[in-house]
Length: 209
Image (cartoon, rainbow, N blue to C red; front, side, top):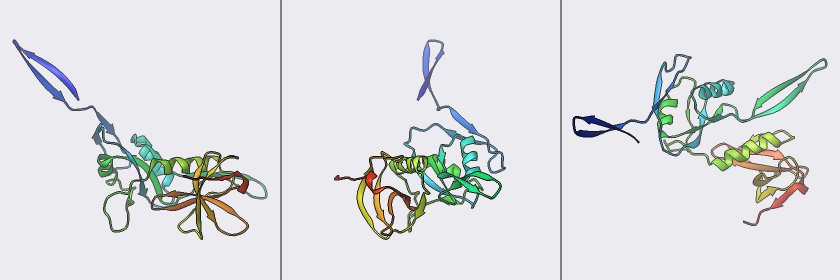
């Protein structure tokens, strides 16, 4: 808290000044002027539900407003007979992750480009997504050399594992057996299921803790 000392004659008075404000300008007509005070409240990751195919544009708007966010994407190449096109595929459609606190929650839901925050069934409070899950998902998307897919259910969840070799070295997750031909590792993301990727069996170490 900032304190200003004001002298009137021989008397002194302390004025408690509010913290500085950030002014956010939204250019799409939702909120012409949004002012929020700095807060010491701990921020957490939450999942925003947005319109299909607007994930990247919503992320840009949040970035312009100074709100940290994350859209899980993976670079892919689509081939035709005469050309090749590089695209950024959205891995979790209609979802944008945002780093928020209670104050930001109240402001973000006012935007027309956001449907709502995701919450657990039967509950109204926003579901908080552990930072570790976001970090592991980012690592998987950055390093994986095969397609990352979201699965809401898997045939079997095995032991806790760590990848010790290859491009995904350092990734921690759970072993998911889909069939005899493939070994997949899944990183659980709160509410959304498992982000799964194929991994060489020789790269996997079972964690004993």
